Picture 1 (cartoon, rainbow, N blue to C red):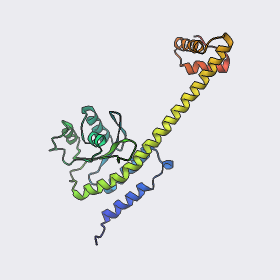
Picture 2: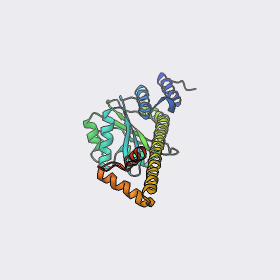
Picture 3: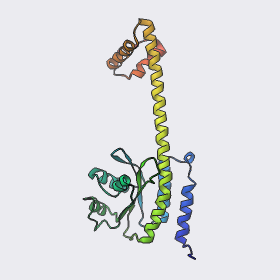
Picture 4: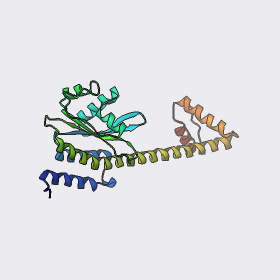
Length: 239
């Protein structure tokens, strides 16, 4: 029977804490901060972490625990290759275990080494998630990532990417809902203003909107704001 080590017990506690995270208590930034705090507890190398999301062909860092992580992400995005880009786009774990000797990914390993990053582990979001991306771990000390450390890191990432990706999807959905609500509100007030102009000046719907658009361009003001002013005051503002 295999006895658990204190490190294993600590890792298990971290996994359980990740599993208890809820949307109601966190934002994407606070989720990442929690992931970062736990990563520092269970992973070697004083890690800096980041989360890469790929939308279409564009990769972006949606959150980072330390400026180094964001900077090294951006180096990879600029050259179009690197561990985080590869993991996020292929869905395969990518390991860069020694930035001083690595020859893959053009200039990235050299840049990482110059910025005191010794190793990089990039874990893709699970295939069943509805967003492509990955969790990136940048080790900032010379402590070697041995096989056990990499296994713990892999287990940690498997737990961590789920709340991170779920929180990203949740915030994205909320954002889309807010944009949709704003668009519907704008459309409603514009339709109301068009109705006033159609009744007042016997215009067609297209003519009424053209009148609003003309005032909008003249006043350098959004059509929605021109429409709101008309609905509230009865005046088609000309400035």
